[in-house]
Length: 468
Image 1 (spheres, rainbow, N blue to C red):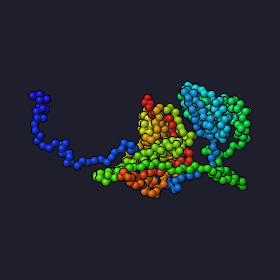
Image 2 (image 1 turned 60 degrees about the vertical axis):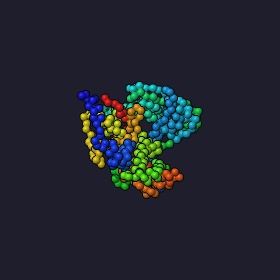
Image 3 (image 1 turned 180 degrees about the vertical axis):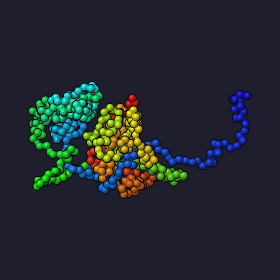
Image 4 (image 1 turned 45 degrees about the horizontal axis):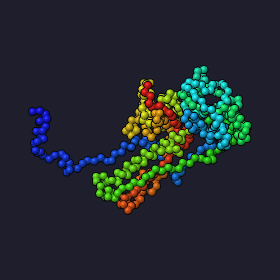
């Protein structure tokens, strides 16, 4: 008898016991709680120290600092043509307080677009600085002379940076370093000759430049703060200088942001389908999880208070070779004292691990709540999938010092709000509609503040797709 004939013979036999499909109708199934793929580790929310805010606003008082115009310049691209937005020229120190829109528009039109290949020299050390360069796209290295006569990289500039701004105010200025293209670069150059021609016709610009040369430079420390006069190492009856600490007259204030939604549940569902799990509780639990995911996303990416947007430009670094190397992270850590944690996209952590493997290095790990977290120089590197990855497969790595006592980064919340289920998170019953639908308003209030600029640093444009 063949196999097929045996199967048909078995099927022809009458059933001798209860089948499993029918038996399941009398059995009690074991169910899991509703699962949710969106839930992540949310290390930022767990590691950030939270400060209770009264009145919904947190004011950061600092010493008076002199603005030096160290912002980034924004451009408009039409096809292969790049133009600088006229108002963005105010990011240059010499034009920071100049506001004549017509003159700024003419200055923007005088900017000459230039293209450079990798290795091209934009400006040479010791030559006359007669142009201001605005970097629309690409990377440029500032090359100086090291202590032993060899070349030393003084810094790496990226999209939106500028250099040569001393050419605006000092006709005798020279280049103190060599600017060399690392990648293909698109640059807008503003010659001082064109600036002088416009100043001859514009009385407001001419007076503005004259005032810059006439005003004495304010004494400031290395961080731009008004210097405190001190005397040290003196003997005898030398006169001791008097001083005072000046404060910023317009300190920044952080207002609590909000994330909220209205959860709707039909009363029939809430009344009848609550065993073995309470439907209202499960609906609220998953809604709160989604709100917390959005909260962490906003703390990273929000344009007003997000960490990526609130990092000062002098605390932003560019990787020297594109990939996140140990050298780049060392440079990032040395920009601030007492770095408490690093945040990176999981793919960036993987890319950093590949660089360590190439060098034969094995990072140490620490235990955080039962999780093994990699560290670099003793600083834990936490994964955070809210840090964006661009289409070019680049991302950022965030380093920060945390806590009020250390003048670091802090989270802001307001505990004690009505119907609170967690600090600064409330669930408020809104009533029942004519369709017998119950509504709950789920709300969380939050923000983040950077107490001093060097508490937060970012390694930008990190390549995560290179495997060789």
